[in-house]
Length: 348
Ligand code: GLU
Image (cartoon, rainbow, N blue to C red; front, side, top):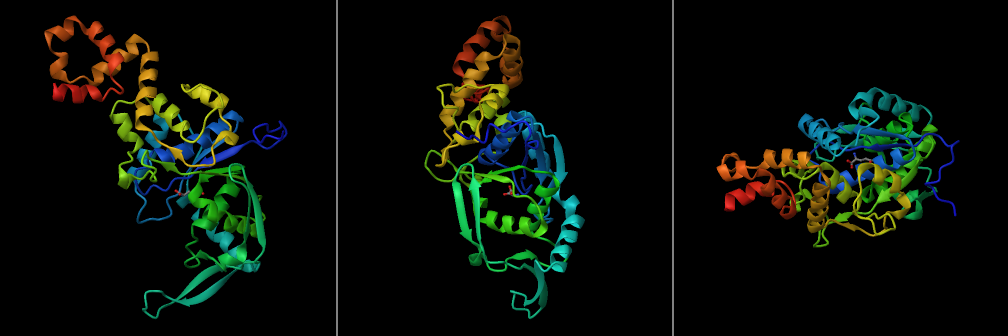
């Protein structure tokens, strides 16, 4: 059976990327995209690119970029290449101009939608209105007739290329071979393929990941209580447990194994085993996985974490000082995550 995981040695180096927009704190569902992209690259001795898509100047914030970088580092997702999309703006403009020169795009004078009567020079893609077919590793073959997309907008003006063009140019320049991203982008892919063909870029292999839902079967979202990764770090969860648990949302190795180290995940990961239906985040499973990883730590490592999370007034109690080791081993059996020590101290 042909399996895309069995990439022959002669194939170009696998390059994947995680391309978050730093416009807010990212939740577990978004980090799953990063994790799958990373695991796939490492499994194939490839490269993992972190591309911060910060071209929306108003909404992009340095604090969110910092949070993403810290969170990825915390769970052990080291990138091989780091880029900020805003640094490539001159290149995006050059490609836009070239597309106009070659007739793949054109300037369209259009009245501004705000009713002000101002005429804007928008750049539109000259859609050849053809069938575009691509094979998605998770969804299978997808065919779209691009006439439905019309002459879509590439840039609001000559100096501001939009998402579709920027993403295609950057993936091309960074040598991305596999685009692993959320399902919400699947409708963008035919546009991206049209742009790739117009600029002579190869089409990467796509894998669009199904949504991550909460136990209530609703889309995981910040608004509905999904927490940022940094909240879990502050709550005393172990980085390896978070990595393990998030990797198991909508993916399984085809065996009964549920506890994985970072390296075991790399060894076991295949995109073919990502399920087609939405994955579900189960907070109870997280507590179980976290407890199991906690039990696997050495006594010294456990003690460092327990002492870090134990409220000072308890640490100073004579009983605690005398029976520290005994108390530690009892606590390790009971707690799901170290932050519970604070709650126990407050309620007790
Ligand atoms: N920046 C996009 C997002 O945050 C991702 C683009 C892509 O993966 O192609 O949704």
